[in-house]
Image (tube, rainbow, N blue to C red; front, side, top):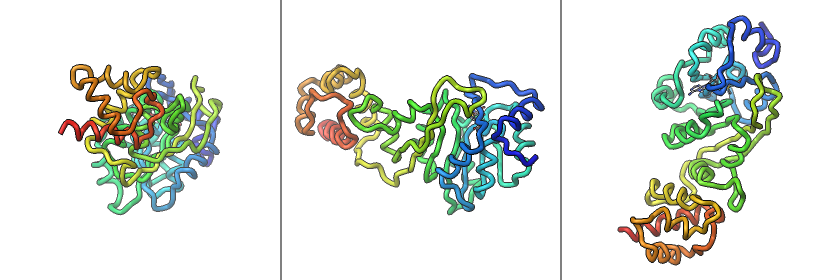
Length: 291
Ligand code: SAM
């Protein structure tokens, strides 16, 4: 069959042949537009030497387009029912490996060791299951898996939060977490009409380029992220009030006032006005004070 999987007619044929019914709980919304797929592959910058990790291949619609451009594709799929489907739909492609596993439980460094060559550039490309977008991305980033970029279709509002600028309503602790590890950018907006079944939310393709070093020097990462979270705790409260509330019983108000002054940050500001640099300064000043 020469017709692309990512077309309405071929998708319907495959679903019918295997008697497949969508599971909402697994975020199963398949793409039926081959141009959208080609655009994603183009934006991800996949070349003939690139190794690709895909999360959630579904019936192989994106996998197929990746396999035609990449050196090798390794795809993780949780749904057992899709394994025989993928075996058939991807049979023309010898450079694809499908692993039946929950991506949140996978040992990705081990898979990379086994499936890719040592010097190979590896990229993550996926149309993610939306119910676990944030855990999937944060897991990949915190494990510091050796990939150069992550290009993913996700819910538009989440993409906007992950790539937000300070002083916007989308800017929050998730923005800081993503920006600590990557440079993020929305590269495409995608209408609901290209999905089967159509989701209730709008979608966008977010690209994360891994930083070789964090943009700020942080003395204690755990404390840094705790402070960021505390600062955004209650959006309408001042930074000072959020910090006092969060560190109650651990730090005195006078301590917090002093650290803010030393960091040159006005405690009457809102958390959403602080840049990642200011959060780093603030966190490091707290740490210095404790030592
Ligand atoms: N790549 C296909 C496409 O673009 O048409 C399907 C994308 S669909 C939005 C998400 C896919 O992720 C589904 O195939 C679903 O079964 C799979 N999935 C859901 N949770 C998963 C998990 N924890 N690990 C791996 N795959 C998962």
